Image (cartoon, rainbow, N blue to C red; front, side, top):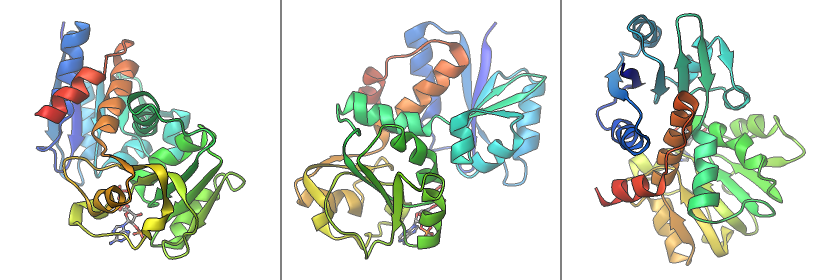
Length: 266
Ligand code: ATR
């Protein structure tokens, strides 16, 4: 019998997840269906409960429901716990298991696809919202020499680094000093084409500038490119977080490189 999965969000029509999971299923001979589901803002829980009644085995959760998914989960993985958000749920009639694969997605894209280690590097994380929170702990687990979290609202960055005060510190954009080997933009500024008030001197020679958004050249990417940095967008992270969710559901690891290539040429 075909096992049913879905991605829930609002909006959802732009989601690439159905296409990615269809490719994974084809590649690994898994008999699954995967649908995009639009939930109205106050109907996340009823939507998930309805899907459980319909026999769905799992869902991905995207904006703006990752916190609600976290709160709805009966059990949480350590990564969902540290992110205060869940993007992958394993469903059955007895319980809802919440996971977060965003951080693993970012780390796998940087280390495996781009071939760059975070260990021993000076890392700068720009932003302290939901997207940054999802990747903060997984970055620390890679043992960078230093992790600075810079945010427009300093208190939010401080709150995040207080979870691991010996390993990370907080900054405003204006107070940033020195150079970084890896700079990750986890702010939402790319959506509105706003440039961040960061000096170009922060990009070290041979720096990796990683934009977590995908699908367009953001001001952050353009600024980094001028300095000669290697620039990456978040398409690889999107496919990698999907692969980790697929693995949690199916116990099979799909190959991501051909899917990233296909999505990029589409
Ligand atoms: P997401 O889920 O995409 O992370 P979010 O939780 O609303 O969305 O967080 C958005 C992030 O982008 C925050 O770090 C936010 O900074 P504040 O914490 O100060 O709000 C950042 N951001 C959004 N617009 C920004 C802007 N114009 N300049 C600088 N940072 C911005």
